Amino acid sequence: MTSDTTARMLRLLSLLQTRREWPGLDLAERLGVTVRTVRRDIDRLRELGYPVDSARGHGGGYRLASGTDLPPLLLDDEEAVAVAVALRTAAGGLTGIEETALRASAKLEQVLPRRLRGRVTALQGAVAGITWEDRGPRADPALLASLAVACRDHEIIGFDYTTRDGATASRRVEPCHLLASGSLWYLLAHDTARDDWRVYRLDRISHPTPTGRRVPPRQVPGDDPAAFVAQRLSAAPTRHRAVATVQASADHVRAHTRGLGTRIRPAGDGTTCLVDASDDSLTRIAQTLAALPVDYTLDADPDVVRHLRATADRALRAAS
Image 1 (spheres, rainbow, N blue to C red):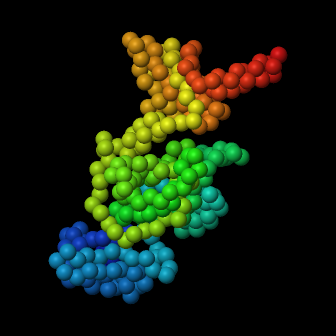
Image 2 (image 1 turned 45 degrees about the horizontal axis):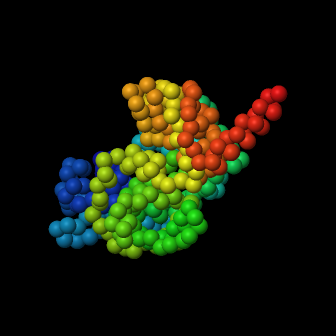
Image 3 (image 1 turned 180 degrees about the vertical axis):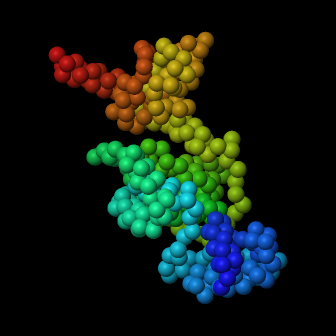
């Protein structure tokens, strides 16, 4: 096999790894060869153990299928560095993935070119994460992976979902995006029964069941999945209500706090703003309010007020 053929096959393999399916004509155009040459190169990849599926006909194409073994992956320099650093800093909100990530990181670092190893070592030495004992709900990495595939393939999926009040019901959705917020993972999907968009917490999803039915991709309202999910989460009903009127502009509060996003809304002439600190957790409400940079007045449920007074009393006793 000549060096040109080898280089072309590596390029072909790299293309197959970037998209689910490639028409033969598109591959030939990308590689600057004929469709017949693409077929020959595909046969060579199969001889080397790469499971490449093909479909005949006008709409036919090629895709790298799953096999019994994981074939080598081709990563460019930037991809290799990104993966190595990501593995070292994995994986907030996922159960039991830290040890697996470290094993994968060790394997990758063994084969990194010397020119990249120094960059990765420097990044890993400078980047660190803080691990808290109480991490809150954790998602299953296998569930995350299966939902990611369903999002990619636009495949309808069914699962059982446990609501905030502990009730469990079946759901059937068109998955769209996975988003992480702090230690929590969310699935943005279009519910087929309700004909509406819904946001599901991964730690409340169980028994995912692929249906094999694929649908055209849906356009997320506003074209920004993260903003849409943030808006839905801020508007979702909570167990405890607490809204602060803060004596500062929304921009000032936003610049001096983290994670409040759409919970901050301008009020009046713009010199004050409203911060919705409502939550299912009284402790989180107290933490949100404690982070506000200036004075505020509070409109809250009685149980919130009692909790804040008890917290303040403990702090005063400790200080005295």
